[in-house]
Length: 418
Image 1: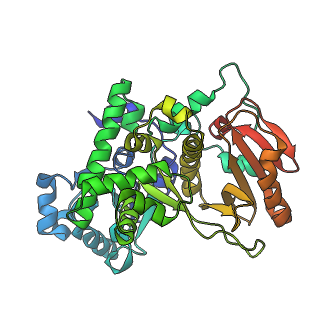
Image 2: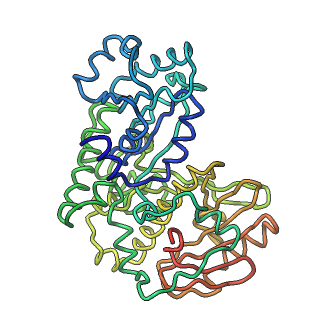
């Protein structure tokens, strides 16, 4: 396919604007994220030349002498799947030391492991940009530059989305478990979608993990991933997960780290503030893609609808997956947190501290009927924080947006992208 054809078929991403801006201002940008999330496709649009380092023929020169292999290449030069030839990072660093012009290199990778500690040689020279799987906002197309959901929530600017085509709980359940990798979104049939997700999961537990830590037991890794899938968006104790998988605590910790490095699982930290006392300190675990969770645990839409606890977790996971890219890619990145008091009397699913110190809170309900009682934890957070609390919303599966009290709203989940 020609570059022109690629551009014609390209689905714009939320990362496009920050990637272009960074490339215009720094020598090198490293795009990280899950395998098959679309990193290479986005990078190719800006690259003058691309080298796929996970292909032996293309990588040979870089394995032999990465510094020499960079010479004479058209720039911006895309070095795809850099982790296949780790020595290329040092060569890029040295090339930038000699010539620090903006826009020289784009690197993409599906592993974050080498970015930690002393092994990461690009600190201060290579700026990292995180991409995730697709969001509904990206799939819908349209203006990706306009203010995102968190900014609109902070100003209480959530217009009603009521229409005859409003999504139902079945629609939301389907979206939560459909899978949001580009190839899944564009799958020609349900059979193709499911087969792709099963294949991805199989490679994840057999090949991707073993390449990072050497030999591993794919059965135990698969069992641990299934336990994570069934507890996504939860605060399950570590022991709950590793005992369910029949592995040791140390093995589970290693698996957690690997899944994070592969961009497949994230931890949303507990929010800490001196305005609130005796808060839960454990992080919430999320899988980044509900389709993988469904493939691992083996449930379909009907099975999801018959299990209210799992349905709530999957809808929460879906909402997090829609908001996380927006928060990460903002001009002033926003980190998402959760809040839960030590005994669970108050709990807010997601909390974001915006630039300037303002705070917004988000509760997710897999239900269409919402009352003021559903906003009681948000009201508690508002009363504790006072003027710092900009707004709170209960996201639900019904059709309407309406007020629930001072700075509190109920809104359809679809408000995130409409």
